[in-house]
Structure formats: structure tokens, C-alpha cells
Amino acid sequence: MTVPDGVLAAIAEAVRPVCAYIYDLDAFSARIEATRAAFPARTRLMYAMKANPFPAIVARAARDCDGIEVASGGELSIALAMGARSIVFGGPGKTDEELAAAVAASERMPVTVNVESVHEARRLDRIARKAGRRITVALRVNRRAAVPDGTHRMTGAPTPFGIDVAELPAAVETVRGLKALDLDGWHLHAMSNNLDADAHADFVLGALRFARRAKARLGVEARTLNVGGGIGVDPTGARDFDLERFAARTRRLGRGGPLLVAEPGRYLVGEAGWYAAQVLDLKRNHGRTFAVLRGGTHHLRLPAAWGYSHPATVVPVEEWPYEWPRPEASGTVVDVTGELCTPRDVLSRDLSVERLRVGDVLVFGRVGAYGWSISHHDFLSHPHPEMRVVVDQSGDGTSSE
Ligand SMILES: Cc1ncc(COP(=O)(O)O)c(C=O)c1O
Image: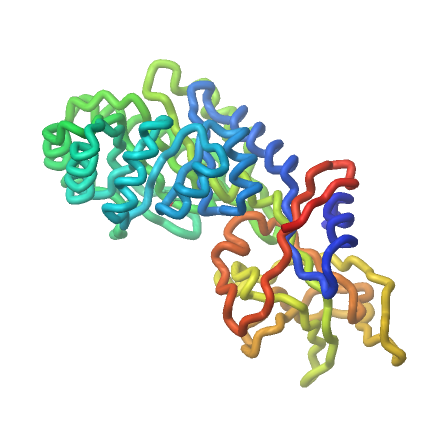
């Protein structure tokens, strides 16, 4: 894996020992544009900020996407502060306070609440009525249809997400009677990390068929059809989602039907993030070589959570401040571990290295999504990584927080 110049420049400027997340905003923008081009023209492209709520990322998404998908009151606050132009509010457990915040936000910009249950619809209606407002809603449906393979299957199976399709007629009838709700369409987010472009296209086509059938059976003329996120990024880099293939099958869709809403997270930001950590120690133990990092799974939980080895690239650092020989491993494989007191703090096993020395930096790519945000930051109270932003592709502009 080649580490871009801007990321190398950010590492050179980072606090020692290096431990940093580095985000390339231009790479993020480029992926947003490519994704927008791959969906049918009548698509509203939202950014699912759960993938990465770092303010500079959300600000860039607010600029380049049509809006931000949020899943909590906290995310809503960040999205508003970062200049979101429209909001989709999802998530299975919204409190009254969060629903009230969504209703309040709807005074400033278009807001759609993806309603997860009839009880939630009733609460939202009550809150909107008290505020003297009418709020746009999409009903989240848990369909029977099988969904593409991915890591987190959310529909077509018993899950806490959405309204069981068998209960949809009754739910629609109830929602129609709730005068502060404007039923806009369907929300069908179904899976995460799907790498199969044909399966994803089939999913979108199936969603459109669902909307047509719902019109015929329930009399709901959906203005919008939210197909969620779920496009994958293989963190090992072994496979890529074939965006062109997806585009070829879906680009011409949606002319007459509902406006598509897509809310990807991982696919938009996954490849815009890098994690860099300096090697604090190198040792042989019971026949294996361990590289111990200033960092670990409390910053990047994904390899431990999903049980894979995250590839890493060695960035040599020439500084060596000590008067004894520098420990090094050459032409071998190492297990890359972190600073936590647990044998599970492993980012990579059997990483092949030509030469790795104490003080060199290991760089992990494809960690822009569900990296820092899903990790258990405060276990053992180590300092958090620096957050650095590459602001200029030429490599001469980085900033840190
Ligand atoms: C409702 C909803 N929309 C969008 C997403 C974003 O999914 P992804 O990051 O896989 O694109 C998620 C992820 O869980 C979600 O639950």
C-alpha cells in the first residue's frame, strides 16, 4: 500500500511518539463525487455520519453531499453546527428530546425522520403538534426479502429495526391518522459492508419494486425511497466494490418513480482515513516477533471486532535518541500489538516486513469509517490519538486538532 505524500507530511509533523488519525478531505470529496455519479440522477446523496463524526469530515460532507443522516441528538447537533443543508434522522431508539430536536431543526431546513415503530410515530406526532409543526417521515420497513451479504444484516431477519412488513398496513393506517406527520416514503436500509455490486443493484431494484407494490396495495405514493447505505470497503484491500458495475445497472433508474435517497457512510469515508502509530518496542516471545505500538485496538477496534489482520506499511523514521543499538526485525513476519494490557490488543498477525525498527511508524489505510468512533477510547486512560487533516493534496498543508 502506497502512503500518499500528504499523509507522510502529516506523520512528519505529528507529535512524538506518533499516534494519529489522518483524514484526507480531498479523497473524501472525490469519493462522494464518484458515488453521486454512480447513482441515478434523481438521487439525494446523504452522508451517514455514524461512519465518522469528526467535525472536519462532517463539514466536508455538509458541503459536498445533499445532507447528513444522523442517528442521535448528538449527531444532529454536530451536523447542524457543521452546516448540514438537510437532515435524515434514523435510529431505533429515539428519545422525546431527540425527536423534539429534529422537529426544531425542521424550522431551518428539510428534515425527514425515519420512523421505526408506530409508538415512535405517535410520539413524534404529539411533539410536532405541540410545536405547531408538520414533519416529514419515512417508515422504516423490515421486509421479508433476502438482502445482500454483508456484515450486519438488518432486514429480512428478526431485528429491532423498522416495522415488520406484515404489520405495515395497520401502521400506515395509523400514521395516516396522525395529522402532524407527512408520510413521504419508505426507508429500507438493510445491511452493511456489501462488496457485491450486482447484489447492491438488485437491492435497489428490489426496493423500487417494493415501492410500486406498496402503492398498489397500500395506496401510498412514495415521494422518496431511502435505500440506506451498506456499500462495503474491504479493510484488507483484497476486494473493491465495483462502482461502475453498480452504475451500469442503476444509472438510468428512477426517472418516473420516487426520488432515491442514499445514505452511505463506510463507502464514502472509509478510504479517506489513515491511522499511524509508532513502534515502541520489538521483542521475540515464545518464537514469535511482536511490534508494540503507541496505540492499538482502543483506537482502531475493527480488526479485533471482525477478526482479521489489518495490513500496514512501514514508514521509516531515522531519529534514534538512545545510546544502545536499535532493536529491529528484518525479512520476517511480526504480530502488531498495542499498548493495552490484554492479549486481544492485536491489529495484525504475521505482517510481512522487510525491516521494522523501534521508532518506525506503521500506517494502516482504509480506516476512515468506523475506526476511531467505534473504539473503546478510554480503556487504560492512554492519551487519544491526534486528529490531523490533510488539507492539500500536494502534501504541503496539514492541520491538527
Ligand atoms: C440507518 C442507517 N443508514 C445508513 C447506515 C450507513 O451504513 P454504511 O456505513 O454501511 O454505508 C447505517 C449503518 O449502520 C444505518 O444504520
